[in-house]
Length: 85
Image (cartoon, rainbow, N blue to C red; front, side):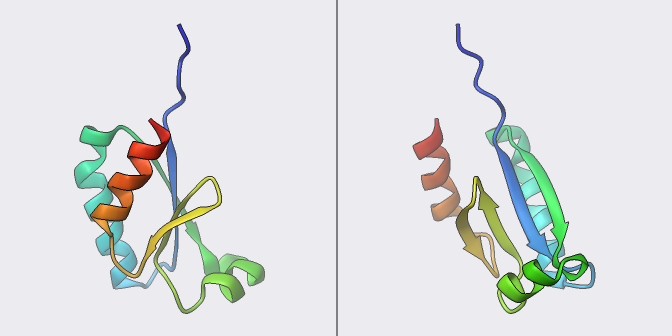
């Protein structure tokens, strides 16, 4: 039996970003149904991330693949989970 590791969704955002907090809350709400871990990365702590994502936050990724940005796109997230499972 192969044990698939739980997927990790990475949210690139800022501490003082209300859209980031909203996306985190939405992800936490659906987390029990989809079984994934959330990693939150503050882009303001890394100049490269700040340059890459500065105007897009929050940005939701997994395995270096962007799933969505600004708002949680449930269709894109569902498609991502369908692809990896």
